[in-house]
Length: 145
Picture 1 (tube, rainbow, N blue to C red):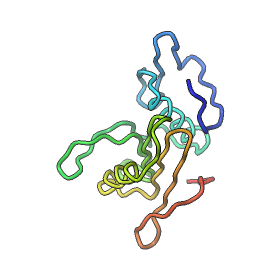
Picture 2 (picture 1 turned 60 degrees about the vertical axis):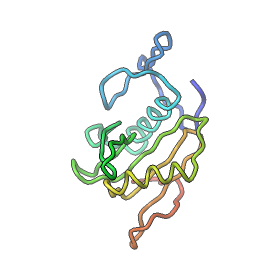
Picture 3 (picture 1 turned 90 degrees about the vertical axis):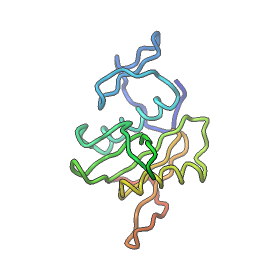
Picture 4 (picture 1 turned 135 degrees about the vertical axis):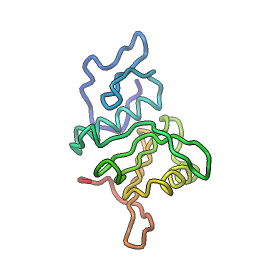
């Protein structure tokens, strides 16, 4: 798979190159190894390994309703079972992080109200954090969350 702007992770037997599948540790299932899934799995590894977030506090590709329309977020990290901390929107490496991606994540976040929003295509990472005025501002890649 394409080299991304992430630390090197040890994938072990989680990738089946022949069948083009990758095992998702959070969902406990194999998924097609698409470019977007490759980015999603690298995000999950960073959350699990670098930030030491428990698998039980991460939801992957779950549905939510936005203005009556069914949508699916990529990743949400919870502080507990009901309070979202981070909303992650993943795109394939060739998809630019544009205003439309920010709008998409912002629409999801109207329902979630997470403290952080992370937009990534695996090459470019954009982190935003809610301030005291409940508005989001750009931040550097956080060392801790």
